[in-house]
Amino acid sequence: MTFQAASLPAHTTGQVRALVRGRRGAALLHELAHAFGGPYHVLLPERFDANAAAFRTAFTEAGVDGRVYFAKKANKAAVFAERAAAVGLGVDVASGGELREALAQGVRGQDLVVTGPAKPDRLLEIAVLQGALVTVDALDELDRVIALAAALDRPARLLLRRLPPAQPDSRFGMDDRELDLALPRCRSAAPLVTVEGFAFHLPGYDVRPRADLAADSVRLCLRARRMGLRCDSVSIGGGFAVDYVPAEDWRRFDPHEPRHYHAGRTFPGFYPYHSPTAGAGALRAILAATPEGEDRTLAELSRSSGVRLLAEPGRALLDQAGFTVFTVRGVKPRDGYAILTVDGTSLSLSEQWFNSEYLPDPVLVRRTPPDDARTGADAPGPGPYPACVGGATCLESDMVTWRKVPFPTPPAAGDLLVYLNTAGYQMDSNESSFHDLPLPPKVVVTTPSVQPVPHGVRWRLDRRP
Image (cartoon, rainbow, N blue to C red; front, side, top):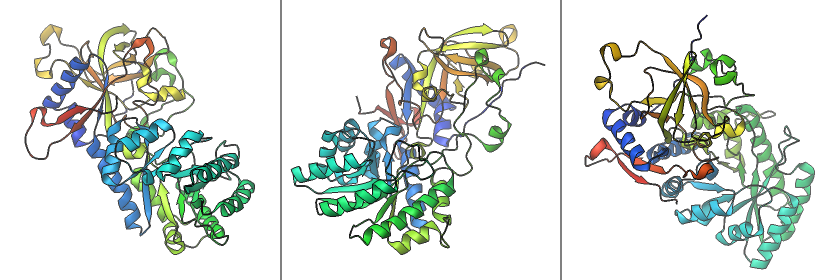
């Protein structure tokens, strides 16, 4: 039986379709490819603003006092920290570099939450000086924060990170015994230390476990208040899914079939590219859930206890907020499919970091418009035209896409491949200048609301060097 390559088209927005499929938009993408001479990323800050508004609306509709922090590790670009500052989001940082970058883009120190394990003293010192909220991961870190606050004679704002009871092997957070030791230490260190509450992070995207642990953390806040601690906030972490592809396409697609991939490659697992409960919808579902042992929803429990809920989405705030563009350099025929080589590497699609594959179909943007394409004897036969995508390095493992993607027309040198919805973790988490290749630049694209401009959009380079 002849192998049929499987398609997995990605969700898009009107703005993205205009850039990728519209004549003026495609001309701009080719022009930028020529200007940069290599791959590049497109950033769409207006979409970030819309996602931020949706999360805040979810809190408002549930009547919950909530705060949204953008998890900066999801994308290094300056523009998203700029937008977080402009629309009043907090920013979650986990390194000195992320903290400095957030401050440089206008985020106030009091709007930062500093996370991560075993934070260096210098990072903790800056966090205390800036009035940032610090998530404390361990008892020895708590002792260092207390000592720094005393040395600086400045109060430290803390969340105590919990080890999820269902994840006893996690290396993050404190178990109940450690929290029982931490709380009296914090009380003794007052007023140099203010415990504003507790934090946790759960892997996966299930609603019920997050609602259950949030409710348990609210109860822990009430217990800590009886000890004289402030404890009026609970961070429920990040991990809000993104819905990349339509449900029916994901249902039909079998990501574990080796025939789908060059060299019969197999992978241990994949991101759930379709999620029926995603983004701000996932937050709504968590707030509406009734936790175990409660007869009220989490939203009702939050309101009655006066506990504020904090959320730290990264990927979900970047849904549809960017894409990645490669240029096809060459086409090598194989038996039943082709190997495309592009001008970048797999390090710009970071699922390879997790020994996995970014599955949504890339979009082919032809160098030659369809109405100018070849005709007659030179015209290609009916598609699809399956092809995998290799990177520009000398490594066999440098495959941007192992999967044999069915393209509607045969790809050719000079065409563009656009990987959609890559702003969340994909485009820069694992970038490298291997082979002395420059890191792909980031292009900020906005739609002017008044005057017409060439290509229908305006663009500039992201301010981050």
